[in-house]
Length: 112
Length: 111
Image (cartoon, rainbow over all chains, first blue to last red; front, top):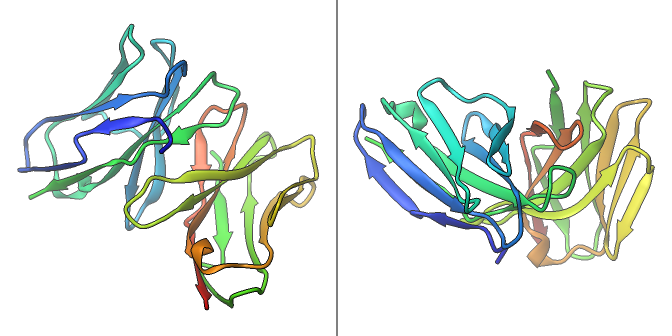
Protein backbone atom coordinates (compact mmCIF):
# COMPACT_ATOMS: atom_id res chain seq x y z
CA UNK A 1 0.00 0.00 0.00
CA UNK A 2 1.53 3.29 -1.15
CA UNK A 3 -0.44 5.42 1.31
CA UNK A 4 -2.14 7.35 -1.50
CA UNK A 5 -5.92 6.93 -1.37
CA UNK A 6 -8.18 7.41 -4.35
CA UNK A 7 -11.97 7.32 -4.37
CA UNK A 8 -14.07 5.98 -5.87
CA UNK A 9 -12.36 2.85 -7.17
CA UNK A 10 -14.86 2.44 -9.98
CA UNK A 11 -17.21 4.89 -11.63
CA UNK A 12 -19.68 4.35 -14.44
CA UNK A 13 -21.39 7.35 -15.94
CA UNK A 14 -23.07 8.50 -19.14
CA UNK A 15 -21.72 10.72 -21.87
CA UNK A 16 -22.16 14.41 -21.20
CA UNK A 17 -22.03 13.98 -17.43
CA UNK A 18 -19.55 15.42 -14.94
CA UNK A 19 -17.63 13.48 -12.30
CA UNK A 20 -15.19 14.27 -9.52
CA UNK A 21 -12.32 12.00 -8.58
CA UNK A 22 -10.71 12.41 -5.19
CA UNK A 23 -7.15 11.83 -4.02
CA UNK A 24 -5.69 11.89 -0.52
CA UNK A 25 -1.89 12.04 -0.66
CA UNK A 26 0.45 10.21 1.69
CA UNK A 27 0.72 11.82 5.07
CA UNK A 28 3.07 14.78 4.84
CA UNK A 29 3.27 14.86 1.04
CA UNK A 30 2.74 18.30 -0.43
CA UNK A 31 2.83 17.47 -4.12
CA UNK A 32 0.06 15.72 -6.06
CA UNK A 33 0.11 14.50 -9.64
CA UNK A 34 -2.76 13.28 -11.82
CA UNK A 35 -2.35 10.79 -14.66
CA UNK A 36 -4.64 9.17 -17.19
CA UNK A 37 -3.96 5.61 -18.34
CA UNK A 38 -5.78 4.34 -21.39
CA UNK A 39 -5.08 1.40 -23.66
CA UNK A 40 -4.22 3.50 -26.70
CA UNK A 41 -2.47 6.44 -25.01
CA UNK A 42 -0.59 4.74 -22.20
CA UNK A 43 0.21 6.77 -19.08
CA UNK A 44 -0.31 10.47 -19.69
CA UNK A 45 0.65 13.17 -17.24
CA UNK A 46 -2.24 15.57 -16.68
CA UNK A 47 -1.35 18.07 -13.98
CA UNK A 48 0.73 18.61 -10.84
CA UNK A 49 0.00 20.62 -7.71
CA UNK A 50 2.33 21.61 -4.93
CA UNK A 51 0.99 22.92 -1.65
CA UNK A 52 -2.22 24.13 -3.25
CA UNK A 53 -0.66 25.75 -6.31
CA UNK A 54 -0.57 24.39 -9.85
CA UNK A 55 3.06 23.54 -10.68
CA UNK A 56 3.02 21.82 -14.05
CA UNK A 57 0.45 21.07 -16.70
CA UNK A 58 0.52 18.23 -19.19
CA UNK A 59 -1.98 16.89 -21.67
CA UNK A 60 -5.05 17.95 -19.74
CA UNK A 61 -8.16 18.74 -21.74
CA UNK A 62 -10.03 21.99 -21.17
CA UNK A 63 -13.03 19.91 -20.06
CA UNK A 64 -10.90 18.67 -17.16
CA UNK A 65 -9.85 20.69 -14.15
CA UNK A 66 -8.20 19.98 -10.84
CA UNK A 67 -7.40 21.62 -7.57
CA UNK A 68 -5.55 20.93 -4.35
CA UNK A 69 -7.25 21.98 -1.14
CA UNK A 70 -5.70 23.44 2.06
CA UNK A 71 -5.79 19.97 3.66
CA UNK A 72 -3.72 18.83 0.62
CA UNK A 73 -6.28 16.45 -0.83
CA UNK A 74 -6.91 16.93 -4.52
CA UNK A 75 -9.86 16.56 -6.84
CA UNK A 76 -9.94 16.01 -10.57
CA UNK A 77 -13.13 17.20 -12.25
CA UNK A 78 -14.07 15.75 -15.61
CA UNK A 79 -16.99 17.34 -17.45
CA UNK A 80 -18.90 16.84 -20.72
CA UNK A 81 -17.66 13.29 -20.62
CA UNK A 82 -17.05 11.41 -23.84
CA UNK A 83 -16.65 7.69 -24.50
CA UNK A 84 -12.93 8.29 -25.07
CA UNK A 85 -12.52 9.56 -21.52
CA UNK A 86 -12.95 6.01 -20.25
CA UNK A 87 -9.65 5.18 -18.59
CA UNK A 88 -7.84 4.61 -15.34
CA UNK A 89 -7.07 7.84 -13.54
CA UNK A 90 -4.15 7.75 -11.13
CA UNK A 91 -3.09 10.16 -8.47
CA UNK A 92 0.46 10.18 -7.17
CA UNK A 93 2.03 12.15 -4.36
CA UNK A 94 5.49 13.14 -3.27
CA UNK A 95 6.95 14.91 -0.27
CA UNK A 96 8.07 17.79 -2.43
CA UNK A 97 8.48 18.42 -6.15
CA UNK A 98 12.03 17.04 -6.16
CA UNK A 99 11.44 13.59 -4.76
CA UNK A 100 9.99 10.36 -6.05
CA UNK A 101 6.24 10.00 -6.40
CA UNK A 102 4.05 7.16 -5.15
CA UNK A 103 0.90 6.13 -6.96
CA UNK A 104 -2.56 5.34 -5.67
CA UNK A 105 -4.59 2.38 -6.87
CA UNK A 106 -6.48 4.45 -9.39
CA UNK A 107 -10.09 5.18 -10.30
CA UNK A 108 -11.49 3.25 -13.23
CA UNK A 109 -13.87 5.52 -15.13
CA UNK A 110 -16.23 4.01 -17.65
CA UNK A 111 -18.28 6.35 -19.82
CA UNK A 112 -21.24 4.68 -21.51
CA UNK B 1 8.20 18.23 -25.67
CA UNK B 2 9.82 15.05 -24.43
CA UNK B 3 9.32 11.76 -26.21
CA UNK B 4 10.10 8.49 -24.45
CA UNK B 5 10.30 5.26 -26.39
CA UNK B 6 10.42 1.88 -24.69
CA UNK B 7 11.40 -1.54 -26.03
CA UNK B 8 10.46 -4.31 -26.15
CA UNK B 9 6.70 -4.16 -25.70
CA UNK B 10 6.65 -7.77 -24.48
CA UNK B 11 9.43 -9.87 -23.01
CA UNK B 12 9.29 -13.50 -22.02
CA UNK B 13 12.14 -15.05 -20.03
CA UNK B 14 12.76 -18.23 -18.14
CA UNK B 15 12.90 -18.04 -14.37
CA UNK B 16 16.45 -17.31 -13.29
CA UNK B 17 17.38 -15.54 -16.51
CA UNK B 18 18.04 -11.82 -16.81
CA UNK B 19 15.68 -9.30 -18.36
CA UNK B 20 16.63 -5.99 -19.95
CA UNK B 21 14.24 -3.20 -20.91
CA UNK B 22 15.46 -0.16 -22.80
CA UNK B 23 14.19 3.38 -23.10
CA UNK B 24 15.30 6.37 -25.11
CA UNK B 25 14.38 9.99 -24.53
CA UNK B 26 14.58 13.06 -26.70
CA UNK B 27 14.94 16.05 -24.36
CA UNK B 28 18.51 16.48 -23.14
CA UNK B 29 17.16 18.61 -20.27
CA UNK B 30 15.53 15.53 -18.67
CA UNK B 31 17.40 14.72 -15.49
CA UNK B 32 15.29 12.23 -13.56
CA UNK B 33 14.42 8.74 -14.78
CA UNK B 34 12.17 6.48 -12.68
CA UNK B 35 11.05 2.94 -13.42
CA UNK B 36 7.67 1.67 -12.35
CA UNK B 37 6.21 -1.83 -12.04
CA UNK B 38 2.49 -2.19 -12.53
CA UNK B 39 0.68 -5.36 -11.57
CA UNK B 40 -2.81 -6.13 -12.79
CA UNK B 41 -5.41 -3.96 -11.10
CA UNK B 42 -2.85 -1.88 -9.22
CA UNK B 43 -1.20 1.47 -9.57
CA UNK B 44 2.39 1.82 -10.80
CA UNK B 45 4.95 1.16 -8.09
CA UNK B 46 8.32 2.88 -8.12
CA UNK B 47 11.05 0.23 -8.16
CA UNK B 48 14.18 2.23 -8.91
CA UNK B 49 15.14 5.64 -10.20
CA UNK B 50 18.25 7.42 -11.38
CA UNK B 51 19.26 11.04 -11.68
CA UNK B 52 21.35 12.44 -14.49
CA UNK B 53 24.46 12.90 -12.35
CA UNK B 54 24.75 9.14 -11.92
CA UNK B 55 25.54 6.51 -14.56
CA UNK B 56 24.34 3.41 -12.75
CA UNK B 57 22.31 2.47 -9.71
CA UNK B 58 21.68 -0.94 -8.24
CA UNK B 59 19.21 -2.29 -5.70
CA UNK B 60 19.53 -6.02 -5.10
CA UNK B 61 18.41 -7.76 -8.32
CA UNK B 62 17.46 -4.53 -10.06
CA UNK B 63 19.80 -2.07 -11.73
CA UNK B 64 19.38 0.94 -13.96
CA UNK B 65 21.98 2.41 -16.31
CA UNK B 66 21.93 5.82 -17.91
CA UNK B 67 23.81 7.04 -20.96
CA UNK B 68 23.24 10.78 -21.18
CA UNK B 69 25.19 11.17 -24.39
CA UNK B 70 23.08 8.63 -26.22
CA UNK B 71 19.96 9.63 -24.28
CA UNK B 72 19.02 6.14 -23.27
CA UNK B 73 18.52 4.27 -20.03
CA UNK B 74 17.90 0.64 -19.25
CA UNK B 75 16.41 -1.53 -16.55
CA UNK B 76 18.19 -4.77 -15.73
CA UNK B 77 16.57 -7.49 -13.65
CA UNK B 78 18.77 -10.45 -12.74
CA UNK B 79 17.71 -13.87 -11.45
CA UNK B 80 14.13 -13.24 -12.50
CA UNK B 81 11.31 -14.79 -10.50
CA UNK B 82 7.66 -15.41 -11.45
CA UNK B 83 6.62 -12.54 -9.16
CA UNK B 84 8.60 -10.18 -11.39
CA UNK B 85 5.92 -10.71 -14.05
CA UNK B 86 4.19 -7.36 -14.58
CA UNK B 87 4.17 -4.35 -16.88
CA UNK B 88 7.20 -2.09 -16.48
CA UNK B 89 7.20 1.59 -17.40
CA UNK B 90 10.11 3.95 -17.78
CA UNK B 91 9.68 7.70 -17.47
CA UNK B 92 11.67 10.88 -17.93
CA UNK B 93 11.28 14.23 -16.26
CA UNK B 94 13.03 17.56 -16.01
CA UNK B 95 13.26 18.65 -12.40
CA UNK B 96 10.27 16.52 -11.43
CA UNK B 97 7.94 18.65 -13.49
CA UNK B 98 6.04 16.90 -16.26
CA UNK B 99 6.65 13.17 -16.39
CA UNK B 100 6.73 11.42 -19.75
CA UNK B 101 6.20 7.68 -19.77
CA UNK B 102 7.23 4.95 -22.15
CA UNK B 103 4.56 2.69 -23.58
CA UNK B 104 5.32 -0.16 -21.20
CA UNK B 105 6.89 -3.62 -21.37
CA UNK B 106 4.92 -6.68 -20.39
CA UNK B 107 7.38 -9.04 -18.71
CA UNK B 108 6.46 -12.69 -18.38
CA UNK B 109 8.72 -14.87 -16.28
CA UNK B 110 8.06 -18.52 -16.97
CA UNK B 111 8.60 -20.91 -14.05
